[in-house]
Image 1 (tube, rainbow, N blue to C red):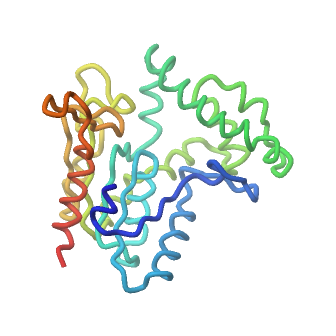
Image 2: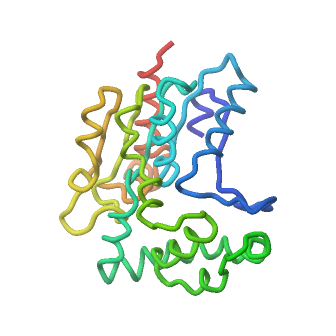
Length: 257
């Protein structure tokens, strides 16, 4: 709805094999932005005279910031927004799994979602990728355990720390050259708990040091929600969330022409 309001053509990048067939052994990898690079190149090739904007959510926002920084001025994106980005992976998964609630709810929940993907495509991957242990992946009860199987068999890493470092978009923040809005929620359960807030655990100083980046943290919003409701609507939710409206305003201001 928001993109239609802006008068934009929409292109959505989903995981490989998400609600569709998986044509090869290659799967979505948080450390790999080659699919995003291909989609951006396709959009530029098909619509060379159109302005290109990008919005990333959660893991997609991490990949977007990584793309923007890695390519510096060598891309066609005019402005972008990152929503609920952790910028780093390892410290957040360790914090989540370091608490009983985090391990039982969030780590197991994310593990289950990834295992659903493997239940659909796992057998074909096991046939195509030598050494991939599907049963070990399906038996994992924590996300770090699942990572251990995927990273060392499907992704081709020997060292987990090397993988976590390559996932991180934090090193690429200084090289972002276009207007970038980073929206976070102070109560995002993937990055915070108790009285801890996002700005206390995210690399906000790196963001502040880049004059092209705007960091905005709301008091509430959880992970990707930002849902609002008013009594005037009978407590029905607003058509557009805060994040929708903020992104629209930012993209209009960043490129008003």
